[in-house]
Amino acid sequence: MGRQKRFSVFRAFWNELCATSDFSGRWVALDNVRYQNGSDEPLEADVVDVDDDLCELVNRMRSSDRTSCCVLQCRMRSPGVRAGARAHR
Image 1 (cartoon, rainbow, N blue to C red):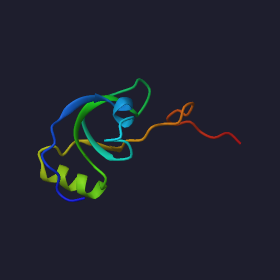
Image 2 (image 1 turned 90 degrees about the vertical axis):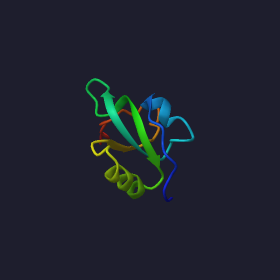
Image 3 (image 1 turned 180 degrees about the vertical axis):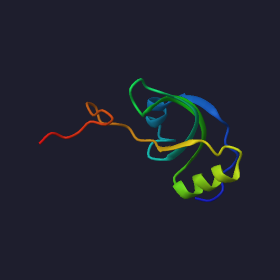
Image 4 (image 1 turned 180 degrees about the horizontal axis):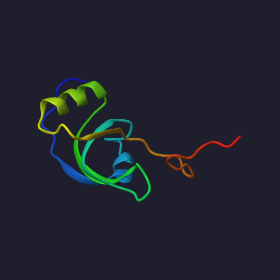
C-alpha cells in the first residue's frame, strides 16, 4: 500500500472501530490498551496507525518511536461467538 500520510492518534472503543468501513478487515496498531475483564480482546485503546498490509504497518511502527504497540486485525465477531470459545463435538 505504500507510505501513508501522517496518522493522527485518537482514542476509540474496539467494537465501534471494527464496525466502521475505514477499519474493518484492516491491521491496526494500538497503544495504551484497556482490555475487557477476563479477555484478551481490547475494550478501548489509542489508535496509532492502520494499514491493509501488515508488513507496511509493522515497518512504520519499527521506524517510529512507537515500538511497543499491539497490532491486531480489526474484525467484527459474529453474534453469539465469544473469544476463546471452543467447538463441542
